[in-house]
Image (cartoon, rainbow, N blue to C red; front, side, top):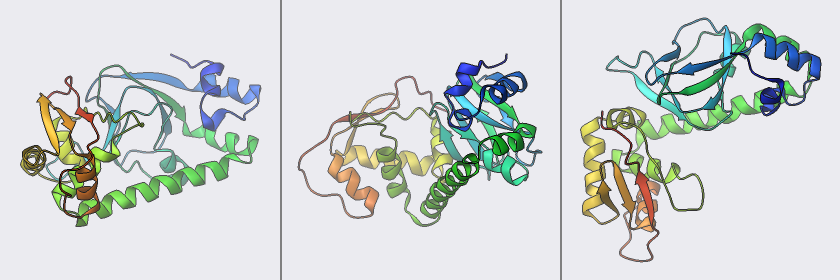
Length: 248
């Protein structure tokens, strides 16, 4: 399936291209649909394309997801998020193995051969890509620092707080238990124990399978910052988890 010019116009990397370039991209790009756990590209593969997430959710593992030492380090369901653009720009093999995390995930595949013409047509595109790569590197570095130095409890607290998408107080975690443990760089048992401790201390409350309600947001924030949880005080309320999130 080919994208339309209007679809391409929604994506930052194509927004300033003229109609002729958009037509060329539309003829060469394809829309792919992924089932859960299907592979989009593999670690070490030649960077023959970069991708844009159109819908659903993807996750990137360092190495093969089935390897015991692999780690899920990147998860996104943000529409129009770019994937592996840095590999294409630098012409280096894909760093990770990217898979769909939910059925019906759709991605736009853009052949790497289109990028030089895009850069020539849009002189500001190179700066925008460099900024994007710098932001991705900063986030990745922060995450790796957390995984290498923070106790599991603090990683869990930071993850729960960071998963909040807006000011509604709702936080949704839809990863399987094993995927969440991999994302946090910890054993599944350790992550479950941290969640159980948060529940026992009244900071979160389990209200269903994989569903928690945050009962004491200041305490959760204190744990995420590395300090002791404060005593009872004002409490923010929100939902952590998803009733549809299956166990691994």
